Amino acid sequence: MSNDSYQKNIITYLKNHGFEAFTPKAVLFDMDGVLYDSMPNHVIAWRESMALFDIHMSTEDAYATEGARGVDTIRKMVKRQQDRDIDEQEAQRMYEEKSRIFHEMKEPPMMPGILELMEKIQRSGLSVNVVTGSGQRPLIQRLLRDFGLFLDENHITTAYDVKQGKPAPDPYLKGLAKAGCTNPWEAIVVENAPLGVHAGVAARIFTIAVNTGPLPNEQLLCEGANLLFKSIAELKDEWNQFICEAIL
Image (cartoon, rainbow, N blue to C red):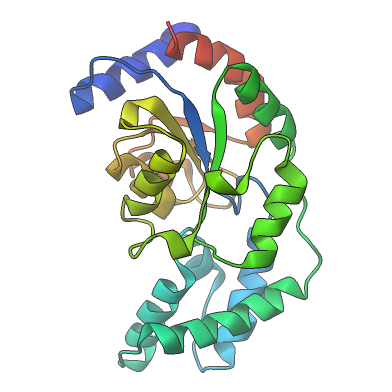
């Protein structure tokens, strides 16, 4: 994409929200499907765990609900398929079974290019942050192990930091605050899921969609993504060109 195209996208973002300037200080990354190629494992874990509770969870369901708090997804699936309401405690017990299956699987690999992208972000003077619908301690520990050169625990927002998960703006608003930013135009969201893109846009943060899964591009763009890339590696390659336009 050309410099002019990036500039047009930024100007459109500012006009749509009535902001005067775009001065990013932080990047807020989603985790699954952005930092790790983990969605295939999540699909298996969702399908096998929910079957134990007579809930059918398809591949499409897993991708469509990606980014939401696990307990919220379970409560909606139970209501839809069994026509009953369950409390968060029961949903949490079911989610723990999903987590058990997921963590018994081989660790998913990091997305190609993610470390180089974080290095470029840091060199640009922006902080690296993570906003995830997960709250599992092993995943947080892996984030710190893999990305400790760029990330600390104070810059990680999990399901337990908010009452409402994605697609509500709450996770990204919390991530914004943890990044030390007071205004939405001071951050950039990087997401791969429709619910996550919706959350970033609802928080009025400049939102970059990276289509690392099977969904059509239109499904991400219709949620309001300000830019779309086909991979983390492509975003890494374009980062310097994009950020030069952003900080002019």
